[in-house]
Length: 157
Image (cartoon, rainbow, N blue to C red; front, side):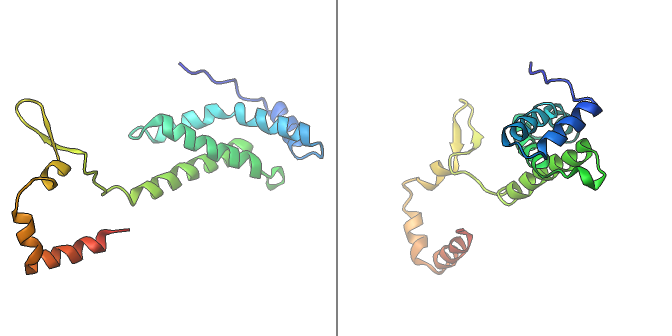
């Protein structure tokens, strides 16, 4: 079971945000690291609260990217709390992931099992396509074969 560090107090958060925006590169990087580590609990909370239907480990990784971006772009002069700002960054990163994977939702693998027979052996699309049936050669030369060929060309990326 993974445990997260306790969140920063308001005073600690203000201190590390001041260090983050300071001129010392080493202190700034240290503050950035601490702000990220101490807010990882927020990533897990958002993933568990809103996205229980997907792989949570992947979403935690994606949410962590949003956390890193949020800490890196946070401006304390905007009168917004850090947790509020990075929550939106985490959610936005997860939503961008869902949008990018949505376009592949209809993709089918040739090796994906279609059904199983009584023995438990699975039948895949590749098994069907690679049959030694001579009917495919006959269809290739027909008008239906030409229409099928044109339709398949339209499916290529």
